[in-house]
Image (cartoon, rainbow, N blue to C red):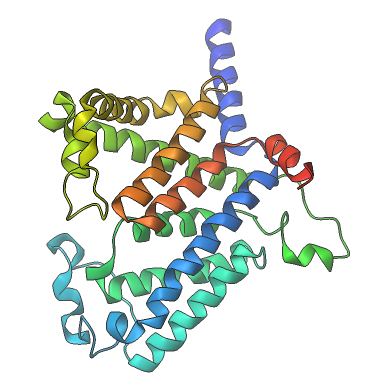
Length: 301
């Protein structure tokens, strides 16, 4: 009984340490800066073309908004701007909030507002949403728990009190949720790929690279290097399926972080989905040690 009780208490202690132990805020502040800066740049384009995306005379008139939803979304709570004027100013406010968060102003106090506005515009035009919008929803949700406005904040030059260095319990939980979200996404993607015969045969990536409707560049030269294509295909499967081991193991974590960043940059450049690739690459910084960031920041240019 004592042995069992010891194991249970030991497990509970490690469980609490995993979720709630204080973490250095420098890493998540780096993630905040890069991810939300990229979000801001992404949604500037939608602000410029807001008449097409969100006005009643654009792609989706107000009366047809919910017609684009799948049947299992029909009964959920819908809320979105009901006029062109509201669409313009609310989306402009959304951009302002993203910029403030990127600069380290407001933190979780204003991230909730940004999340609500983001979901509102997602519902306003479901036709233009894709993977990057989904992940932006995840990051806005998790950052609404995270105290990310202490380190790397533009306000630190004016603050009279010393910025907080380590996270509170709620922030630690938000960071872990973000890490787990990335790992779950990779594992799920890898398992789904195993259902396709082209991934088992090693030609899945070739079918993508050779399809000019998907990629904006000519990768026909890869037909002379079939083993390279097959190798990258299998490496993708291994990377995604074994990501829980890779990212949560101190031994393999640097390899998986660097490999993941390169992987997403290649996807961004070869398939033309730049913001999806760049934002996912920036998100992987959540696994980087704050000591490494400090060493880089101290190096002379």
